[in-house]
Image (cartoon, rainbow, N blue to C red; front, side, top):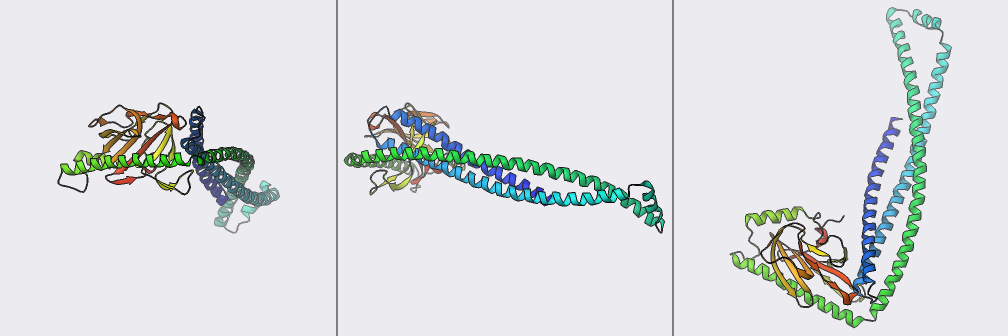
Length: 392
């Protein structure tokens, strides 16, 4: 019986933790979808189909799939919980049946020997004082056990009733989850239809898309050149030609920067990642691979760029066709913010965590979208910013 109760407690604790994690993930995806929807609504003010709009929609579909996956996993946990609950209830019923049977036997024995005269005979018929004393102890223990047996039956009955109620709740929850899953699938199909329409429209603009890829590559090359200039300038200041020669203060900043990997604030107050780090297929021209040294974050019109960590502005510069850019040094690390319409910091300025550094450019010719490009480097090594910023 004790095993049944311990197993039940373990299952409920484990299940509660897993469901809590899944719901947090699902809640985050729902928040991102609401933001994506508002950005798409902003972009719809321009009827023009654009790559940025498609990337926003792709992100929304990705988050929608996350919600469906979270629901599937929660349904799996609920099924597992129902199955285990049924097993626990079966064990409790078996324990209860056995306890009631034992208790009935004790009651029958007590009924047969309820007369005080019978108890006295039982005691005085002992062959010695020692045996009489043992019989007296036995009668006391027997009465105590009978009382505890009644309490255990009451406890097990209560636990079983609670589990029957929880079983009913879980079956109801499963029904709600299945209905939610159907609704998410309906929305997903609608979004996929919009996605197909966007792709079909943009495929007719292959020349424009290829020109855009070339322009983005030029902007990326210019950022690379500016970063390389910083590295070379730092190397010239010292005898160490391999990269930065850090002061003790800069070493501390770099160490703190590294310790905060995965926990840094976003470089915008709210946004959606619409372009990921690394090499991947173009969203429309599947035969073309694009390389990104950082991530693109779509945000609302008028949004401000902000520093992800304290540091010093190494460079502020304009990029032909790519607006303004800011590079902030954090010891041996660099954070790069580009596609800014205007900048509010200057080279050499000390920057605090989350300090605003400029306003992000809104491209009215690209569906009225606002996109900031963000990179993180360690000396000359490109890093994936998504591994450094907070995920929730």
